[in-house]
Amino acid sequence: MASAEAVVRRVVNEILASQAADWFTAILLLFLGWYAGRVVVRLVGRSVARRFQRPSLTKTVLGGIRAGVFMLGVFAAASTLDFQATDILLSVTVFSAVLGLVLAPIIGSVINGLFVLADQPYEIGDMIEIVDLDTRGYIEDITIRYTKVFTLENTFLVIPNANMRDRDIINFSAEDTRSRLSLEVLVTYEGDVEEARAIMERAARETPDVVEGGPDIRVGGARYPSAPVSYIKEFADHGVLLDLRYWVKEPYYMPRIRSKIQEKVWDQLDDADVEIAYPHQHHVFDENSGVARVDVGRERGPETRPKDRGSPEEFESSD
Image 1: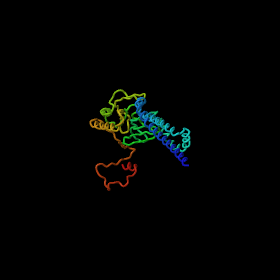
Image 2 (image 1 turned 90 degrees about the vertical axis):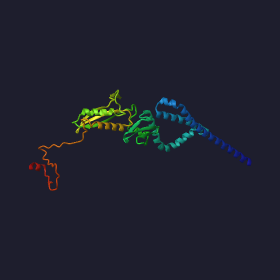
Image 3 (image 1 turned 90 degrees about the horizontal axis):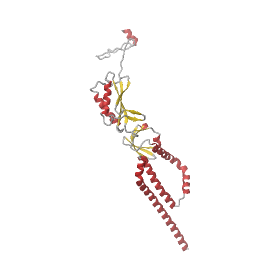
Image 4 (image 1 turned 45 degrees about the horizontal axis):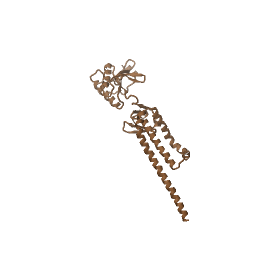
């Protein structure tokens, strides 16, 4: 009896020892897979970066390589523990219905992330504007799940790629960092319009970060003058509307550049035959308008205020 118990105990100890050895081997293989992934990424990182030349795509490819090497370690560890592929497929089948609702948004975001990486609407470091949020910022990071935007208000926006593909995005740094802006000024009809146009163009040329001139800038199939140009946009009700169009070298300080141009225009208008127009109206009275009673130079008291103004016909008959 005692010998039988000793045999059973020895068998159990051997099984436990073998299982402990298998688990230790599996953990070691997982660690080796994780470490090997880092080593492989370090070795091929520069080659991949030169091949794709896009930080976001390079980061995604290197992440895929690291994950692939680690999965080899996972499979090796699973084989050590006698896990079979049929067991894994059975587990996936059982839990797929339960996890489907949870994983569906993540899978959709991943798929949209792949489209974002393939379509290249923006890149890390680009300055963009999210139209519906009226927010500008820089692309900080792009993954297959989300896009991280560092806004000009020193805040972060982390937006799933599924939402980014549904938004209207303005990319100021896509092909050429030069961006065209416009400034409208309404001047009076009595002033010198040509002098006003010259002042606006000179103010833009003298402002730093504005393209002073040079070859025309090609946009699509059209070419636009790179130097600041002022046009007569409209003969408005209260004056002549001038439109100054100019190009900035980089789209990062647009409000500051626009403010500097307006300051220069304002300073140079003092010595020019140009006046800024403002809304005003002229009232004209004729024989069909009645009579306007106007008192100038004295304050009307209660005793002089008429009790009943009457109708326009009464005013005409009183005269």
